[in-house]
Image 1: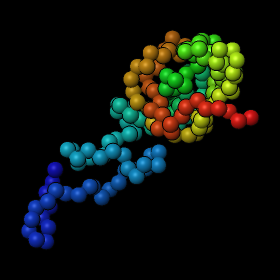
Image 2 (image 1 turned 45 degrees about the horizontal axis):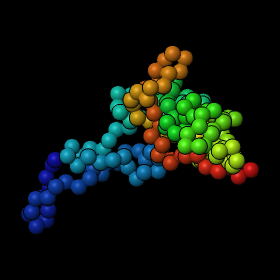
Image 3 (image 1 turned 90 degrees about the vertical axis):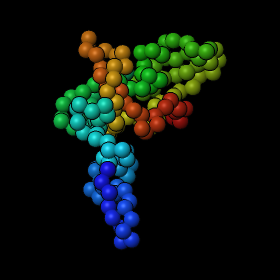
Image 4 (image 1 turned 135 degrees about the horizontal axis):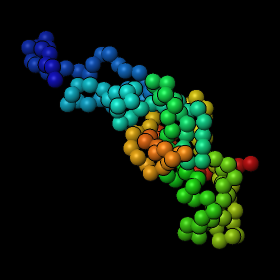
Length: 160
């Protein structure tokens, strides 16, 4: 960390760098690390986090383009995936999916609720993904990225 001398002659830590990185996802800046005096990088394929642009939505993952313009599969968060829940019952609630982002939840066969992922994923939307192995495969290829869900997506009652 560099030190600067103020008008009074007292040394103080250097303030945040004046050159600000891009503003992804509406944040003022990427997170700042005061120990290194740098901002967290987002745009390298070697990093743990990367910005992705959605090209298509599938049942359990998104087809995205990374900053290097490579096509990458990004897993949806577990609770937004179709495969673990479709035609299954958990705590008396049965789920039947009709589309990649629509399902019907039935409680003990008596109450039906149409649900949608909200906010929905949109083509060309930017998301933040983390590199790790969520255990998914697409066409026998492991998916290495997962959506961090900075938009706070969840299942909600669909108003028709």
